[in-house]
Image (cartoon, rainbow, N blue to C red; front, side, top):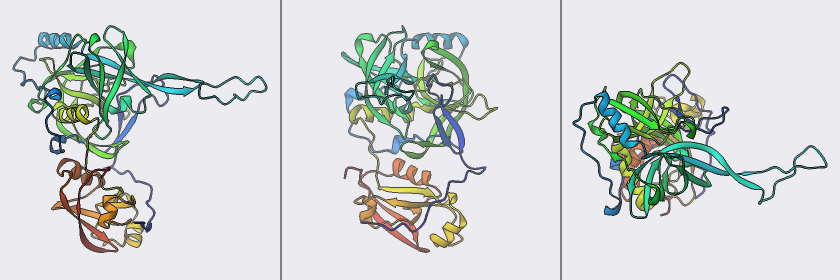
Length: 411
């Protein structure tokens, strides 16, 4: 069904409670635009996927979580832990096709390149962790933003050798990706630990490749500075909030996808990003292992993570001007929060349910919706594909409820 645009979204306003600039810890090797930027709010990517629908267990892809370490966090123990992880942390290289300009002998302007005049160049480098070894293939976890847009991906081993890697699956929302490499080159595999057992002040170390492969297998030491932090981020899959471990162990560009380990040498987090504001130090973040493992397993099984799909564009009500909310959306002055539908995809489940452009979502089932990220968080963490949900909206100033069955994009 076609919908009529009834308002024009205004540029987003960023106030005190708005987005905090975060830098994803990948490295392009170019000073200008050298780091990818995420824009987040008071909390990070909420990857609490334990409530996300998972497939029937595939024992071949099950990941074993080691019990929480009872070892003391002495310097010697941490040194031994780092030594045991040395070859399990690798470099990940993002290669992309670049057109090569041809010299034009008849003028200064370069001639247009043909399809054959392309070569793959490094678009960025990050880190990865080998977590599973099979007879023929082994698996590496890294960040989605490390491999996003790649035409070819290579893994750089601890000894410096670079080998081809195949992308098994990616999930932009949780910023995770799984790669596959030949087991012929794998000597060490990392064990996952239980991130839910972490304590504030616990000693940890970050292992990765800061600023590229020249500084591969670099180690920084720190403590757990915060647990269950939530930071809103802007990803290629939309706005989201991430549940993360905060650490003061230095996480620099190139560390993305590397390991955050405890004193027993267990991976309790996948390093992902840091705050990149001037004057800010010691604020790095990692995706907790308890949140990452369900996503990793689903990527290994299906190559993607299935989530409910409505087929709508959304924008925070708080980002709109009063003229838009009162004169175009006709919202009561008491309604200052929620998410407004800016577009409806034809043939989508939202279109079939009767949603229209300009509808303001304020509640899903019995949960209040204050923002777009809260709405998505409920859909992805608390609802399952096939569930029937009741969504409360304001349309032309009047409150009403629309019921719909949640489905995937392909349905």
